[in-house]
Length: 370
Ligand SMILES: Cc1ncc(COP(=O)(O)O)c(C=O)c1O
Image (cartoon, rainbow, N blue to C red; front, side):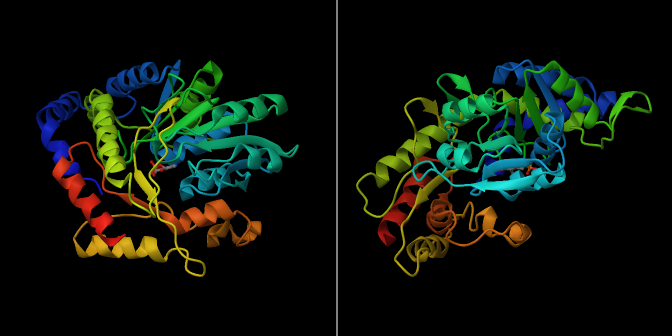
C-alpha cells in the first residue's frame, strides 16, 4: 500500500543528521526538538498550541479528558472509522454512540448526529475519513447550540483543508497520528493534539506527563504519553516535505480518477470543491449484489493480489457491529450506509513516490477485472 523505503531514500541524509544531533545532546524526553516541532506544527495547522503525545489514540483520549468529558457522558462518533476513535471514548470512561455515514464521502452524517444527541451528549468526535473533510458547519452549529464539544480526529487528514482552513483547526481539540504510514509518519508511534485553548493546552501538557504541575507534584491523575525528541527530530525533517507529498498524492489520485472515469461499477473518492483532500487513502467503492454485497469488491481484491498488487479494506466491520462493543446493543441493519460501505470500500496503493507506470498498472488491473 505504501513504500516507506522509497520515501526514506529521498530524505535519508537529512534524517540521519537530525537524529545525530539528538544523540549528541542526549536529551530524549520533553527536549528542544519536541518544543520546536510543537511550535512549527501549531503554525502549520493555524492553531495557537500543539502538544506532542505518544500516539494518535492517546491524542484522542487526552483530548476528551482535557475537554472535560466525564465518565457516564455520551460521545457521538461515526460507526465507520478505526477502532481507536471508540477506544479513546472508553478510556475516558464515556459511552460511545455510533452515528451513520454520509453515502458520498462516508464521513459522519450530521443528520444522524442530530437524531442521536441527548442531554447526556458532551462531545462529538468528527473523523475526516481518508483525508476528506467532514461537513463541519452543521456539526459546529449543533454543538454550539447544545453546549457540546467537538473534537476532530485528524489522524488521516493532516494537511487537508476546508474553505481554506486546515482540518484540525475547527474543533476545541484536534487529535492527529504520526503512525509510520500516515501522510506525516514517525519512525514508530507518535501523535499530537492541536487547540487554541490555553487552559486545554496546559492540561494536555500536564496529563501527558503524569499530571504533574511541578517536579513530583501531581495535580491530577495522568500518565506517560510523551512524544520523544528523536521522533520529533525525524518528524521536523519530514514536515518540511508534507505539502509536496500531499500534492503528489493528489496528482496520483487525479490520475486514478481519470482512468476510472468511464468504468462502470466503481465509485471514485469525492473531492469536494470547497476542500482539499489529503488522500491519506485512495478508496473506491465497488457495489456488490443482493445477498452478497462484498462479492465484487472481494473479487477485485483477489485479482489484484494475484498480480502482486496490494489493496486494503478500511474498514471491514463498522464499530457498532464489533464484538468489542456488543454490550452497547448495536444490530445489523441499524446503520445501513456504514454497513454497506464496509462491504464496498477498497483502498488502492497510494504514496507520493509512486510512478505513473505503477498507478497505471494498478488501474489497468482493476479495470480488467471489472
Ligand atoms: C481515524 C484514526 N483515528 C485514530 C488513529 C489512532 O492513531 P495511532 O495509531 O497513532 O494511535 C488512527 C490511526 O491509526 C486513525 O486512522
